Image (cartoon, rainbow, N blue to C red; front, side):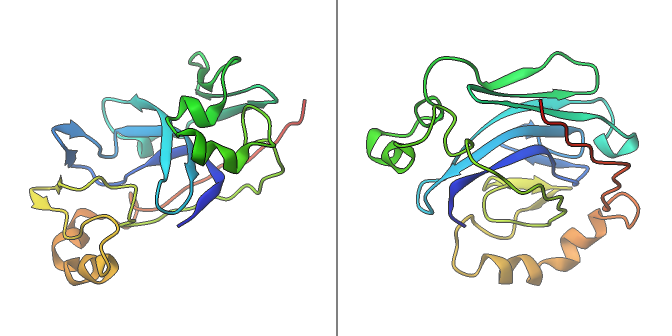
Length: 184
């Protein structure tokens, strides 16, 4: 997927209860908010991680995005906002791109490509080539595909007997109470 126009993730939680990646808990108690951007061969992200003792799906939460001309920050429930981009410096440099990639957004502001109109979308997905780091262990089973592997989706599907038992109908769903957009 090409993220040259960028993607803002208000909240991204891998729904697997017992997902470990490189010794870190990446399961349903781990949530990330942030941005993803870059050309197809060099996609990078910058995110803020939050952890709860149980699972993010146990209760409704309020996720807030502060999207200003010179900064992007996120807030969950009543916590203090955390900045992805704070005033000073360009996002493409903060995220670690070299000048040749930063030229993609050269005519934009310091938060480019997030300085244009965007769509709001809500999604629930499984697998994915970039959201599950390689070498993850899900309930004792290794991840059946490698990121960006040619037949990653096929290997994911062929391993269904291992991963499907880790899903529950109720807990593997997305429940949204409301979405509110306010322009300041």
